Image (tube, rainbow, N blue to C red; front, top):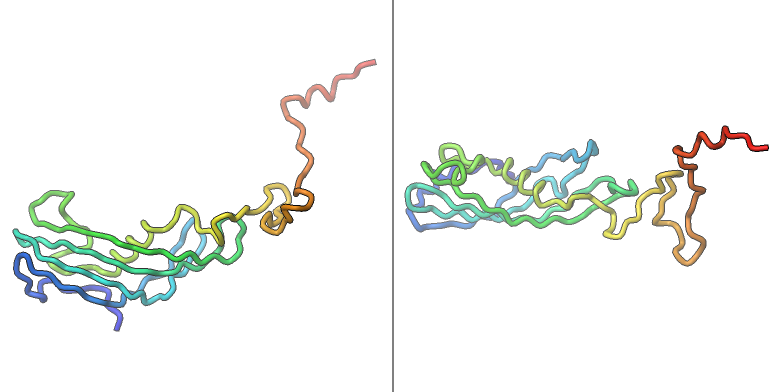
Length: 173
């Protein structure tokens, strides 16, 4: 069963008491750099630890593993990096902004939003098909991963420096 929210007040935890849950959360597809990326599985299994703190607060820990599927940001081939998340949140009423979780409103935990945000924060800066992806040639768009490193290198003539363009107009006799 997919759970997008959890009523922490209904757990009736006393100060110092905690519980662990294994839940499934639905994660919507992401858009990174204008490209769509799908989270697999869409219903991600998560481990949630909830601890009640003194002063009616909560300490929360979220752990999950998911795969992101979409285009490589360098060569546009299929990429599917696996992402591991270990996120923590603290919510203590009256503790200020630093001790207030945006995912907890009146003891209702928005698990779907927290899962999605934690997953995005754990993503690599670039989604790549492989760690050493060479990408595409900026001149002809050839896939540089297919160039044989033992053979002749992929190269183009350098464009003339535009700062010297006026010299072409010079006529010497």
